[in-house]
Image 1 (cartoon, helix red, strand yellow):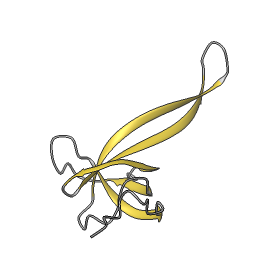
Image 2 (cartoon, rainbow, N blue to C red):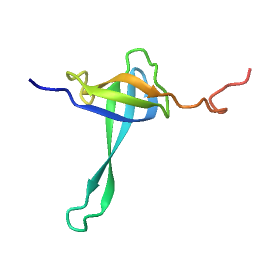
Image 3 (tube, one colour):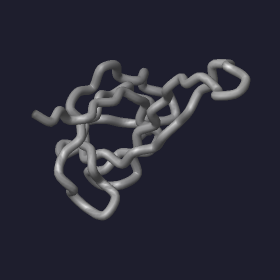
Image 4 (cartoon, rainbow, N blue to C red):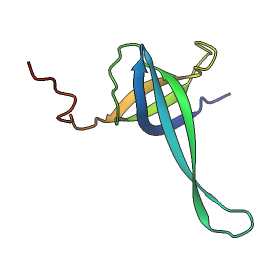
Length: 91
């Protein structure tokens, strides 16, 4: 049986409607120098309810293709980012 890919990462963009860009960081050993280096990938993930926002730590899972670039959906918001004072609009 096939298992869906699961990643955890940080939402780095929430400017699109129902779409978030999630940055996933992983550690890998350099083949020649054997030093641990960080590698980054960015994935577009579907967020049906627009619940996640910039800075949230989320879990994404693989799904059927939703659009040209979207192959993942947000399964769970693990940790919400604190609300910054810039985001609060004064009336």
